[in-house]
Image (cartoon, chains in turn blue, purple):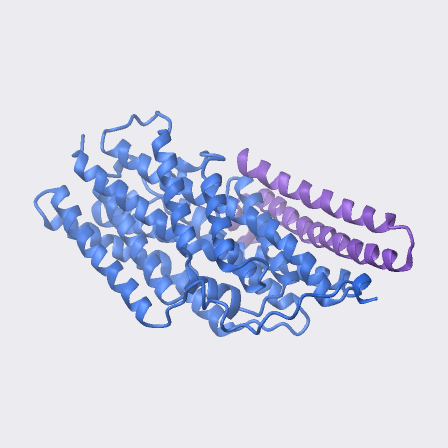
Length: 385
Length: 82
């Protein structure tokens, strides 16, 4: 069945807006510790992450078509279902961003799709074993695997450099941190931009504008890469503050250990075909690095809030997705319904942005305000002598 | 055993073991490489101060950089060819 070009255009634009929110929500994954340890100035860090997200989107498209496959019956997916799923994901992403909680954009997208699918077709359209194997079990395991690796790496980092003055080792670890964080940013671009590419392609196929076996058009790759890069560059400073400064106090050795462990967990899992939430992996890594430092403190109240958000992501995004789908169905045509629900979604997004601006407005200029000033640059041994 | 058998239904435990092994390997290699670099710079500075050979420091820095570059390249390879 061919859907109207207007309908498809609106859904593609919604997918790109989701991609944008994915970018700014997840900037923290790669750059929170880099910013917290002052390895790079905040604006430079998100600029680097943005470029790497853009480049990462072109590295591979192997998982682009798998975002919904194995989780829902893809032949039953329609354009309004995709739209409603995206609305669920966007609204949940913005709600968690407003509350400064790092949560998984991928799980929000899957939750939104599940909710819309169940409302439209019924629970029979959901492949529950896929939900367990692709979403729930990896979500339970990933933070612990990465956290354990980060704990070990942090212990080792401190032990191996204990003879070096902290200021000197900090300078070295900051350099290494830039490399490990860049790898996380690249992996994020590859994994997450592909998810939107998959959604846009699914929309074009469901709308009868692209053959099911045709490759992803170049313009789809480009606009998805650009949207996630733009989102990343806008910087989700609220989430950066939580992940970089509120979970634990991160010093360069911890930042490097957390990001090295995160990149290895994400890349090894991708290689073996598991799509993990970058947010949950990095959060686990930061917690592990907090525990790995002797005398390090993890703020469990913040972790508890994150765990609550992670638990709520699938059902909450699903509920919003279901409501959005029901909203579309109220109207006589899909196009009118999508426009109406889209306007309502934009109103919610605008309200959340305005509320965030009025309360605890975090920007690149004040994101580091809660940290003590950086100690003076170390004097080299030779110069001191 | 029942839990493991149930888990195996949804997640191949062999692959999980490989992922854990990679993560633990990186958790050992990456800090070791970074520490080699950092202590190498210290050794260089110290050698310069004492007028001794900087070779020990140079070797440590070189080795640390090589290990880190190999890790990064392996990561990009895993990303590009899953």
